[in-house]
Image: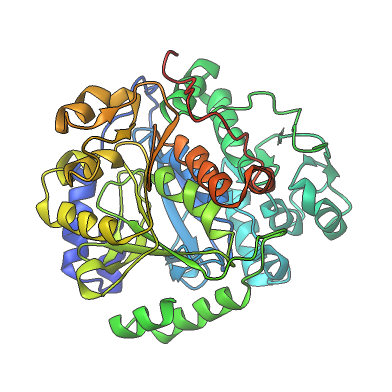
Length: 235
Length: 235
């Protein structure tokens, strides 16, 4: 996956050698269901994304190498970082024709400015319309709500930022209590770690709850299985 | 932090502009304790590291911008990726004189080959000896055990890889039941998500349990506070 990308960008041959080592280590997850094709996951990054919003779901989808493939994108491409100092390499969104099966939109403080970035919002809209599923974590649902694709639909977000989130689009049926919400092809979650619960919930919907439980156990994660009750709401 | 690094490597000016946007967004975590200095965290990466082993603790330390600063290193520098396809930018370990306060060593399938890489083991040994704390997640404890610095000390690792881990160094007092183990300056955790529990445990030891609970709540993480009982051992 990365070879084509890095060749295009002229990244040193050493990097390619390292990446080839990585891909040769690819192993099947135990008990993976056999799907007919690998689903491409497009992770949309922007400056000051929230670290775990991205890499919690990335751990869960990424380990299922027979079913899902992660691709990291941003408007400008190149290194995208955040206030935590986590520099991730991305491909330029506008340079490539992509038709992901799943779009993943993280939250983070960066959403406060990106919500007013029509270039990003329009790209999210375009990708979301053509994809099978759209998943957002934390305040990532604000960016999705700005596309108007959530109008009339149920959704949730980080409860600590709820008044700001809901002020950005009053036509969404915002759920104040859910850990995550599913409405058609749209999955939206509460804050940070809730993205992992939602990703496991997505696996349960696609592959059955026992499969999702097995993945949770492999990563030693205490999965909150009940999407309707977020115990962080009233704490 | 990144400017010096990227200038050295000739990364395009656009990247620097993006990074400067990121650093200007840096905000203080609510209720952060006031320490006298920022602790430098050196995350040691290698090909085929485990995603959440790195970015779980990175979320926890990274958000405390007044107390901790993340730095990502690898033997060769540049982009380091894994079977999940997560490409992270690192600085070259042998190019810089660093004296981190905290060393963080993730696990992952890559440890199966890195355990026989004396260059990496020696570098981990050198950094661990000079740092105040050394934290390992999952099979990262094998790399640490190979330095012999854990000889005669209590430690733990991923229970699913326990027989391989313990076969690499029989002079370590391996704990089969713990979620994480503290022995002096060495913190070692069980698999994947256990790294987050350990990182929160480290915060509790340094700043008090209420502070650690506040961070766990901010990231909506159901922290397993009891380090002695890993409920994934018997599942």
